[in-house]
Length: 195
Image (cartoon, rainbow, N blue to C red):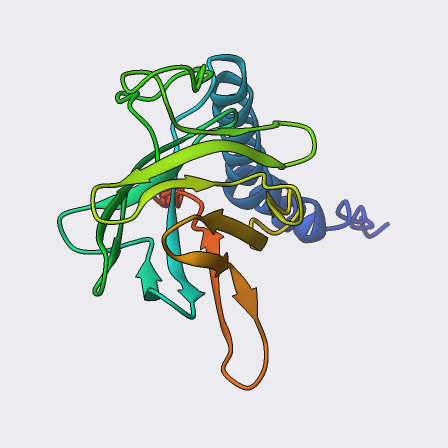
């Protein structure tokens, strides 16, 4: 009697492909997501590094004010601003006396402790900036105020300087301009695993 061949087990190519996909794609993506999440959590817990601001504000009396000039620039932290903005017609505007980042609140009580504070929840700005050629600039005046949108990082509203008048932070017409927070980019190396 002839011998019957036993049927061979079905090929499991589909299972091998799925296993390779998990190994080479899902696991690395999961590791990247966890790493980014941990970095954000640590950054939030320690007050975070500041994010640079960019763009221009406008004052009818002072002209354009650059928040990211060469040799200067403004840095936005969770609770305050630091650095310098530049106006071609008015010179440097210092956003605060504190340097070095980390949590800080300006008292705005003296020439050695002034600056622009930020409410971490609402993004509202308060306090004073100083320009040698223009004097004090109030970021929370009675008929104005400046806020940084917590969702998209755009500045909006008006600051007031006795010697420069209103400084407007965002407009769409007739000329679009604005100041916004430019978040840090997180670069992670792409590692490809071989067989």
